[in-house]
Image (cartoon, rainbow, N blue to C red; front, side, top):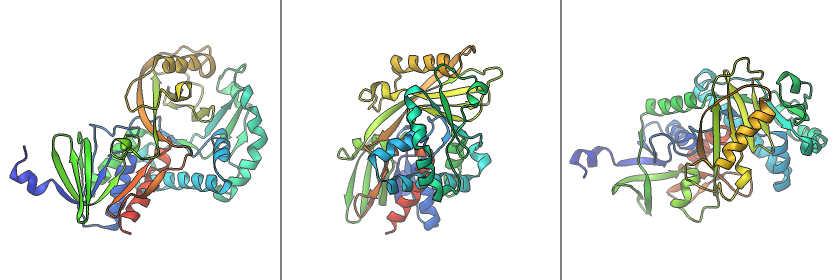
Length: 372
């Protein structure tokens, strides 16, 4: 039941964004940069952004060697280059917008672990370096097999390491808190626990109905709900992808710093001070993990623990503190969907697990489309 005052002051906006994650906040901020006076509201379905924005492992990455080689099998060389550039420029915009301290940015470099079956990727390393050199003016990937012993990885399983000097890590919690703080500073209204049920697109604007039979109105609508978008637009070409992440208790004398990947990015880990944050394993049951339910399958959790014990921290005592799940969205390629749905509605979804990298630029593009 709404009061007169609520109807007067809380329901009508120039711009409404569905989704309060990285893309939704970035879109709202970019709209504000274009229009300093318009009224803007974000509708977030949960208490915290409910996809992966506050649940990711905190990687400032743009693709490991085997990830990019996989992309090259699915896309043209120019498409791959454009996508890597989009990720890199997205990270630059995020850093510029908030500042490195405010996102906990640390450049310890990135690494990819190669197992016996992955060693053929080394034959294509120079080809990928040549492809990306116009973007970075330096070779991005280099073999550093010598670091396997320093990092105390299993020498019987890890056969080589690929080093990327530009990959970094962030503090996901700091990033999201400061992104929200910037939005609020810019007088962007953020509503949490507002699950959108449907919307109606009319000639004079859009009506947005949320759970509880409350209807918001806006001149323009941006849909930034990533994996949850199919509930609103069933025809959207995406599938959800659940990601499981765990964190260990502090480990004395942890032998490595940085961000690490293996098996085409399906597994990823990093240090956070003296803890290890480790995620992945979706490839063990790709179809089963096409879910928007926040649950953890024992199969995947046990594989993560096993890899910690046998590959990453052999002969080192560790304890898993706790684990959680986040929900991403994927397509046949890593290209995001950034487009106009109608004259009044824009759509920015299917981030391919790269929300930290591309979220800011997706928001910038959506904001530009709003004013076209």
